[in-house]
Amino acid sequence: LVDFEIVVGDMIDPPEIPKHAEVELLVKLHFRESLERVSFGFALVSVDGTYIAGTNSEMAEGPYLTAAAGECVLVRLHWRSHVVGGEYFLNIGCHHVQTGEKTFLDVRRSLAKLKFADTPGCYGFVNLEYVAKVQRLTAT
Image (cartoon, rainbow, N blue to C red):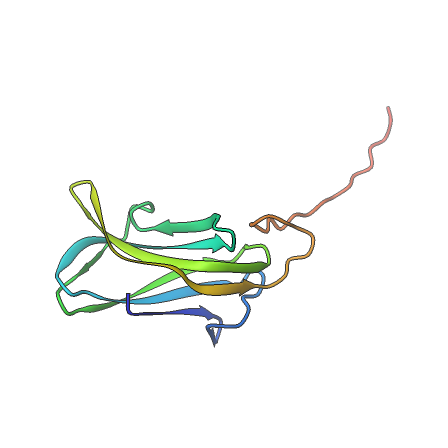
């Protein structure tokens, strides 16, 4: 893993990620040797170490990375943020999948602290966009 950026709209590495924002994580990887079936992923982790969200290409059943020795690859991961406001750590990593065995190539834990905008009216980790409606019933 060489470098990464968080992009929200036209902002690169914003100081705060707005509610419901379209977020893109860009990660540049350099391959020292030729490899196929490399899984890439990320996770958001609370400050007390709880994994709140994440995925990788093995879990998502692709796409896997393939690259020749010396090649650089840019991975773009896109998601809409429904994270409850607060600060979370970003983990990123990649592993090689071969005959059912995983070999971790590079894993960076707590690589960055991301600040998500406040979400009044909810708690936990996920903003469910809760809406309540009340309907009057007539007695019969």
